[in-house]
Length: 58
Image (tube, rainbow, N blue to C red; front, top):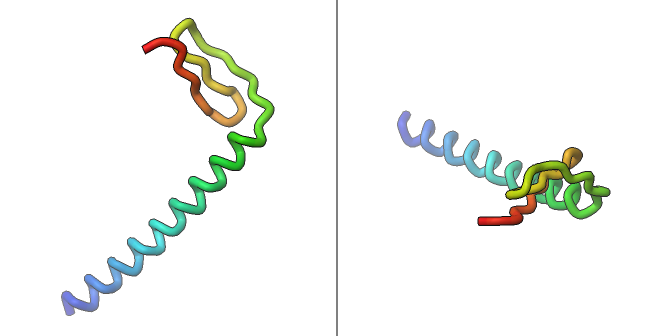
């Protein structure tokens, strides 16, 4: 019984990891094709469209 549940959880985990990778690829595509509109302060700027952040000072 526990082995069946463990196998099911492992399959679900693998499916979730695959979905995370797909979403990461979509984010990268969005950020590379975005016509950035930055706003922020003297320390960092963030794009209002895609959320990419540029740190100006540490």
